[in-house]
Length: 221
Image (cartoon, rainbow, N blue to C red; front, side):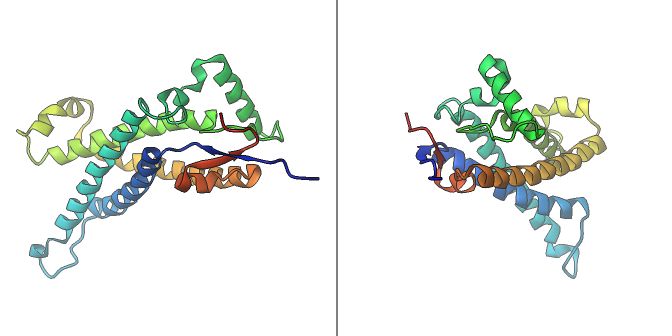
């Protein structure tokens, strides 16, 4: 049986791809340095070797990069193509989106054999991304609130005053730590799902985050 021809579609614009890989790099650095900060050690002969100071410096540098990347992605959701649009992340707001969610959920529950064809994010994934973005915000706020404690009279401390009313210092540390493990679990599922969809659909799911292109049976508009 001849294969159904597929057409090249430009899905992920450059800002989306850059934000994705900057997030990957910064989260990796934040996770590694964060574990050292949580269990401090000194690799030098004395405290003056400043090993933990450098680890904290790298951690907060990566944190600032992460904030810029997340903020840039939010801005691009207002400027980019329809696949980058904020509307993609709220499929349950429309009847069409809800129908697509049901179809994808049925596939995930092994009630459907055929994968529902999607061009950008599938509607179940985008719903998970809303939760992930909420986690990003929580990690940013708790992280910088903890950092700001070194200067109680500073602008950052005053700006994040509401965090000190919501959390104790230990509560913020716990939320920050647990948040990382939830993000790690999401990453494992994300990679697995991307590989699965690439195998099932043969649409360039993995390569698209490098090139921006996916392959679909319909011609580009």
